[in-house]
Length: 86
Image (tube, rainbow, N blue to C red; front, side):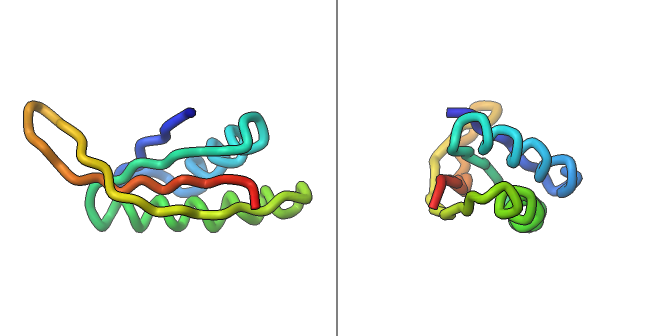
């Protein structure tokens, strides 16, 4: 499964295009965020991507989850957003 890492500086329109392309190709996308700013950008991206996906005849289901990851030897809690076909 392809994982997109979204930061607080990510462009929602560009991330939305990536989400829609991966979703059309694989039927599922995982998005990883750390922090409120990146989660905000990810949610905006999902909303934009959904408009692309719905016009193609599909719809999405969003399943949020926590994930423990390690960055530079430091343990952090990330939020994973799993998008699947409805």
